[in-house]
Image 1 (cartoon, rainbow, N blue to C red):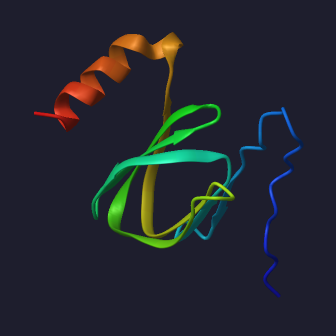
Image 2 (cartoon, one colour):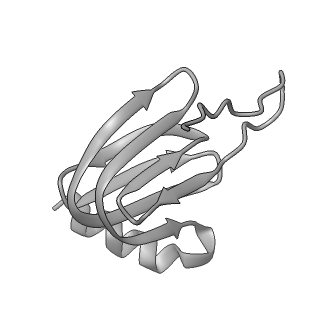
Length: 100
């Protein structure tokens, strides 16, 4: 039985950010502000908790709901990494590779 996740948002508050992985093949992410880039090996999402890089194989966007901030990705998931101020050098390196 599949449930539809409704993010907890009240006026003026930050929406919830959850990452739910099912069997390393399906990823549901809430609190997504923007999809920066994606291809079949890598997604870069801006979430309410920072940038999230997802790496894998045969990745496809299964669902995108911009109003609710929900993204669903299917494929084989290898890596989930948050890129934030604490890892500034790593983020710079990632972005420089991404935009060459």
